[in-house]
Image 1 (spheres, rainbow, N blue to C red):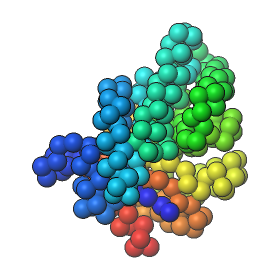
Image 2 (tube, rainbow, N blue to C red):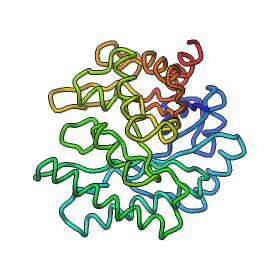
Image 3 (tube, rainbow, N blue to C red):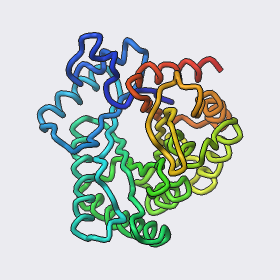
Amino acid sequence: MIKFGPSGNSASFYAMGYKHTEQAPEYLEKFGLDCFEYSFGRGITLSGDKAIKIGAAFAAADKEISVHAPYFINFANPDDEAAQKSYGYVLNSAKYLKLFGGNRLVFHPAAQGKVSREAAVEKTADRLKVLRDMIYESGLDDIMYCPETMGKLAQIGTLEEVVGFCKIDKIYTPAIDFGHINAREQGSLKTTYDYRNRLEYMIGELGYDRVKNFHVHFSKIMYGGKGEIKHLTFADDVYGPEFEPLAIALKDLGLQPYIVSESDGTQAEDAREMKRIYYSL
């Protein structure tokens, strides 16, 4: 079943008097939403006991929770010690995800750095093979690990690169950030065909079953010559992309992803709008 929800707590969460993430399921219910993405972007500072409490609240409300691993991950880093830290960021995020009771973990693959793009992509793929082995050895292979498409040209994470990483093993599922794709491709997503073309590419490369429930990030994003600049809200009418053409493509292809709004401060409101659009078609 397709699901819609916010990344983190919107400004309205606090305006309505809520303070703690254990209260997020109640808040989501008021917006008619299904899921929530908890970000460890700046690092994991949560206690295990707190994670268990959050997970219990989501389970009781029948709301799904995913996590975003720390932003520091860079599997193309030439420094092996830094790469060890990246493995740790993913594995520790996975352990907390299990305490939450979730099964989706999103992570940024890498940055190009000073080497050629081909070398950076190859290094990232090699490291993801090592990560795969560590995941299986740790008994954490019942989780979907989702490398994300990235919005800046200097980042590793084109659609094709992410699909290639997902060919490494079935534990990897694409996290497709359509705002990022639109930003790095200078406004490429406009029509249903634009979306469908990319979705059909994924299905052709990975198979329908692997793509059916893929992970989605969606927001409008300001961009410049080097790609992503900043996240916007659905009120923006300059940069895009628009959600309705994607919703049509998803329905046409029978795909049912987990869709997370990353709008700037209006995540829940814009997630609700996406759900309204989807079910109005």
